[in-house]
Length: 328
Length: 156
Ligand code: SF4
Ligand code: SF4
Image (cartoon, rainbow over all chains, first blue to last red):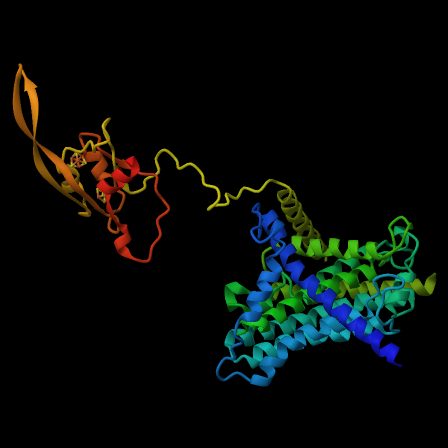
């Protein structure tokens, strides 16, 4: 009994440490990457290559006073940042990093991650609503409509995959793709020839789900000051920030698990956790790369993309796969 | 229907072209000048506030004719001088002569428009634009420059 509690504690601490470390250093990577793309060095003063910038930022955020604006709904205002961070960390529990490194392998892992991901939208809604700021409210309304419309094609794509491999357990999903790149879900197979398209749809949806540019309408600085976290300072803002980056890691892990064969090596050799990490960091790099390449879309463009393009195509793919699975 | 798919395809293609451009930029060298640690040479025609030019002995070339003071449309130059006597040898005889010596050359940089009238109107080539740009202060007194003093500091 005590051993299971210890196990759980270790898992939780490891998940929090992994999430926090990633959040801190992804900010650094993001700023360095943005700098390189714009041909400037990015943060490079604190420590070698600016590697001490994240701790400095952390100290700055933690030592600031947490202000609650007058007229704000105190409870909601305080709960929202925690709600943004906690689900992201909880999701790590079921993410398998390799054959053996997984905190808790669940039969409904996919479902659980999506359930927790929808809580992120809730956090944004509460933050905007609770801070009694018109920009905040507008931003949260936008973010919620965005989250709803992008969850639909995302889930349809996931259903396609689950249909093919017949399991919702993330570990088994990876196991079904073992043995080299031609077994991965991204490669078109006989029963689902449109898999690369599905991958693209899922990728776009994960960008939108994590509120990343070009879909960062929830914090469109040019129109909404800072969007839903306009009124947040100090660690309240810090938690939103960490939640965002933890969600990016989760998103990249999901893409890796669902489409890129998880910890499987492209050539079928030496599968292991390093392949998983390599894949998620390549995906995260492409997230950063995309963010600093494209301008922000409009809210109409965003919703049109989802309802007029992504949903019909993913539905078509679902039906096609269902039919072909019956045939073969 | 065809238009729908071609729009998706062209849109996607343009996105990938954009990604290609930023990817290439990613590996190009950084062009930033890390300002406080590095500086770039100011161009020939850069106009900082004016400064006095010195002669061979290190004294200002200025003869206090006052043309710059009068020519300045913003009235930011104020001069003062005193006359000193000096001796010269003319045909074997020592004679005393008088000349004006600059005792004050103040520039009120807060109203200067860097128009260049002062430099233009000086017939003696006694002032020029400096290349000074590290100017920042929250007190306007810091922009009242004593150019004579600056010249002395430069020489010392
Ligand atoms: S540059 Fe123009 S405004 Fe400035 S001191 Fe000379 S004459 Fe006056
Ligand atoms: S115009 Fe030239 S010589 Fe005459 S007072 Fe001004 S700086 Fe001196």
